[in-house]
Amino acid sequence: MIKYKDIPGQYTVDKFLAMHFGEDEARRKLGGLDRKIDYTKKIAYDHEAIHREIFQFYERVGAQLWRSRADALALYGASLYYNPDSPQSEWHRETFGAPRYREMTNEQYFGAPCAERAAGKPKSDYVDQFAFRRRHPYIESHLPTLNALFDSFNFPIARVASRTLNGLCQIGNGWHVDSADSYVLQLNLCINNNGMFGLEYKTGELFIPESGELCIVNTSFLHSTYCQQRCNYQRTALVINILPWYHYDPTEDGWEPNEYFGKIHPFDMVTQGIIRFGD
Ligand SMILES: [Fe+2]
Image (cartoon, rainbow, N blue to C red; front, side, top):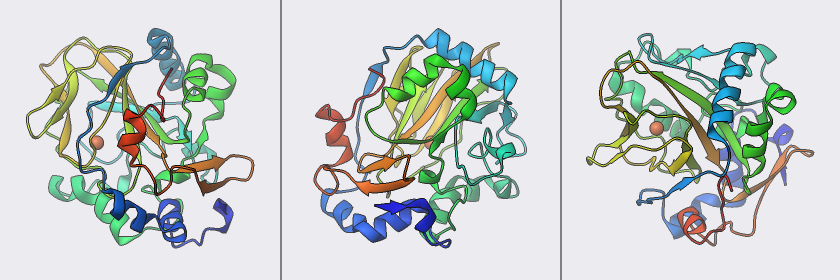
């Protein structure tokens, strides 16, 4: 097991684990995430209760405008998972964009996280996706439905953000790729929708989810948030990252490969029912 405290400061957690356990080679053997998966599912939890709890979180703990763009007035939300090494004042917002991207052109900005991960960033950096590994304490003490939802996942989760779009603002055309290399499954769980909001791929495919429906995002294909037309509606979604190849031990604060590491591609783990979501 590799403990967080033993990871040298110049490596993100995912990069160090990959080096230590030979993940790159295992991934090369099985192929990257640059193949398509069509997976949608309605969760078993009360999405209206989750909606209320998310807004209670915004009200009591805080909501944050997206920090990576000066003109991103349509998007606000919060980090629901955090890095315990960060100052407590950052916990509810530290994954909700990063001010260092604000001066970039759109072209630079949408490629930046991928480029930065490839170039290497220090431990606890914004792109250190495994580091945001703890559930916010306000959720643990006050928000039972969100707790039950997160407890229901049978693999470790990290870097969970709640994202709310204001339908009165300009939305869409934010074409980007999140990750093609690391094995992290990104779920997008729609908490409410008026039928106008969705996820669009540059290939032309469009997914308009119902409230309480989730999809696996094909993060290695160009995609963007979509809104059909301006509307007086605040749409909320949860973005949840799943670690398919590692076990995380919260007591030891460390990771070790699980029985699927190097053996099954994460998409096959989903289609074979090994990874379950929101049951
Ligand atoms: Fe994305």
